[in-house]
Length: 261
Image (cartoon, rainbow, N blue to C red; front, top):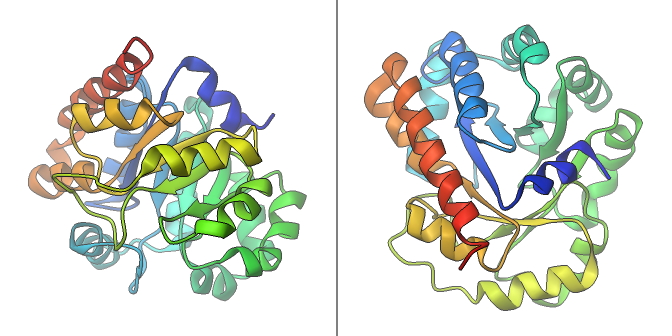
């Protein structure tokens, strides 16, 4: 079992997402440590990119802020490496295929290992093209985490069957962003995933409130939240660290409450 999969042994997992370098890299380091302290089981870090096709406006704007602040892939690698000895939970990079290919896939995965990254999520790398990444991930002990969407249908079993780390179940059609209601048949999707693999599954896209997190964790092994956290950072900037910490604790408590429901 990988380090990422083992992170689900602490009960229902809470997985926060932040954009690396928003508002700056020093704050990113502080946010990672604060989220770990407040119960995050795994942390996803978005590498800022000019064309993040899976992201809604909240994370698009965070990417632009980070890029404007001078963040690039190498600087983000360096920042994460600076705190890796203080981080005891898995860190995951979320990025896009073009960014990896331009950097050099072998070099990128090597630097992930050097910086203590346990997995990557590449939203625009479909199952049929996973072999473009998989050998380099395997050689460096990096889990290549797949996404399953409501449109995956008959492909769910195939995608889940090759899953590493956890299966990222996309709750809704469209891009990331806070949603008042999640109407997808999550129960059926997660049931299919669990038929295909023992790898945990976590639900993301649209989750923002403790109530939503608890509901999703009744079906899945964890909840992923990005836009709601990035909105806090957008509003409070360098002062967001303790506010995000309190939010993470509240959401982790909600995930654990699902086990008692």
